[in-house]
Amino acid sequence: MSLNPFNTLTGRMVLVTVLAVIISYAIAFAIYSNERGAALRRAAESSVIERVAFTAERLREIPAERRALVADNIRDFSLRFDVSGAPNVEQPMTSGPAGRIARGIAERFANADVRAFSRTVERPSRRWRARARGFDDEESRRLRRIDPEDGPTVRVTEVHVSVLLEDGAWLNARARLPGPRPAPLGVLAAALASVIIVGIGAALVSRQIGRPLADLANAARALGAGQANVAAPVSGPEDVRNASTAFNAMAERLSRQLNRQRQMLWALSHDLRTPITAIRLRAELVDDEATRQRLLASVEEMEQLTEQALALARAGASEEARSKVDLAEIARTLCGELQDMGVNVRAEAAEPVIAECRPSEIARALRNLAENAAKYGGGGVMRVYRQAGEVVAEIIDDGPGVPEDQLAKLTAPFFRADEARSANGAGLGLAIAQAITEAHAGRLVLTNRAPRGFSAKLVLPG
Image 1: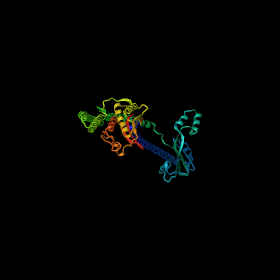
Image 2: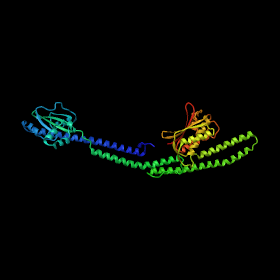
Image 3: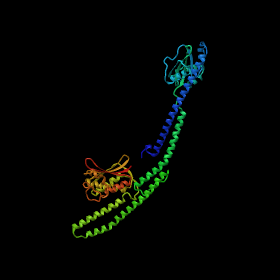
Image 4: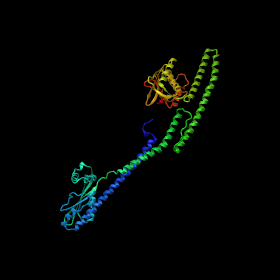
């Protein structure tokens, strides 16, 4: 089982939903921040234009000798004025906030010379200045004179504007426009809460779908492993319930069909034993030795075919209970028995390898593979080990191998390769081994070895 949560339906649905919400919030937040910042900048620029134009109109109406005093006494939150004989702006800008402010003021005064210049500066934050006002006079003055780098600062846009009055005097104004606004933490917190809530909701909804699908997958796996009376729970959304109902109906029909086929084959194999026994008895009465031996050989081949057909029908349908056993011990015991019978096969399985299986069926499959290795390869070695989370029982030999185009046909019932597998036999040994392996949710892997030999791997889930 994969430990990656995004390999599951629930994990992927939550991931997709959360990513969709995050992307939508990011786009909305970007649009909101851009529009909010643009609106604040336009409002601040319009305010500067109105106040500078209004101040210039007032100063034009009063005597020239009083203009400087009046300009110094004007108290504005973010504007400072002074009147002098020269403009403070020597290099006017035609773009950005300075250009927009200059054009706005020029529209209020026909043929007036308006110059503006802007730059971004660092200044102490409002909280820092408010803190300074909370101390006594000496400490307050010290904090107000402190280098802004020693305290929290904000970036602002400083605009210098020079407007030519009628008598050659210049009205100079310095304004501060708001710089980049800090991220609205309240909006970000609300967005984060929304993402969490949506993620939890998506997990709950996907779990209602994922759990019935997992039950359906487990039922399908159990059916493939040869278990009887398999049924998937019918729960979840209507589509999933329909799938579970269809699977249960299919499993029931398949089980009935397989049982009928097995019963028919069992009955046929069993009933064949009586006439075969009768033929054997009659063959024993034949006087001619050569004829009797030929008849007995044919009878023996018929008996072998009948027994193997019966074994194939029973493969994977045994009523033996599954249990956790040491496959290495089974391999050592089996190889010892085969050696006592004159079969050249030895075991290399020193370490215990535990697997859940039907021991007698796995032993039957390993016996077939070992006998093939001894018969067609001159001898074999049975190894049991773990690989990539699976249990592997491998039988290798040093025989001639099998032509590559015939490897896929080896597990077909009654198939015998023309060259490397040409000895007498019914051709059901590998078919029986594959049926037993698949009934354990495993697989049988048959490959040629380089430069010579053959390998048969019985792979079971770990």
